[in-house]
Amino acid sequence: MYDNWEELEKSIIDCKKCKLCKNRSNIVFGTGNKEAKVMFIGEGPGADEDREGEPFVGKAGQLMDKALIGLGIKREDIYIANIVKCRPPQNRNPEQNEADACLNYLRNQVVLIKPKIIVLLGSIALKNILGTDYSITASRGKWIEHKGILYMPTWHPAALLRDESKKIDFWNDLKQVREKCQEIIWKNNWKFTKLFLIKNNWKI
Image (tube, rainbow, N blue to C red; front, side, top):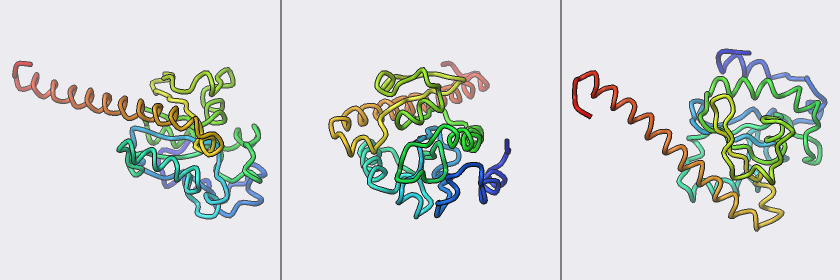
């Protein structure tokens, strides 16, 4: 476990921990605000992501961006990563041994970012982070607290391309994330203000 971004990013440059390294163009490490309160985790890069080296830049990512913009969430204010950092062939789901080989990179990212909220995009992210007892159908839209972090499971944006009826669920789930984030920020600001008033003997 690395205690700074420079060493962590350097450690993955020539990663060969699983067979996904054989056909990659780029390692898709993650992008966004490294002090974000909200982190999004998907399953793995697709063709566009592999080519550009950045997560969620293809059609699914563009759809997610539209939802974020509509809700007033800036992409530069969140951090986005995946379970695996290299593209699985033909965009298949990552195999469990591939996910297991890559998860420590993601865990280290979480430790460094210290997010208050993590949005789990799809079943692969949900099961690898919270365990195989969870299903995305039963869990999406419901807050799950684990080790001091609030998790919001929702559909992977690629699922919305296949089934447009899921778009309203996705929108409502992200709306919950926005509201929870605002609540957390307000509470933190109030705690700071309260301490300031107490220290200065002001009445609350």
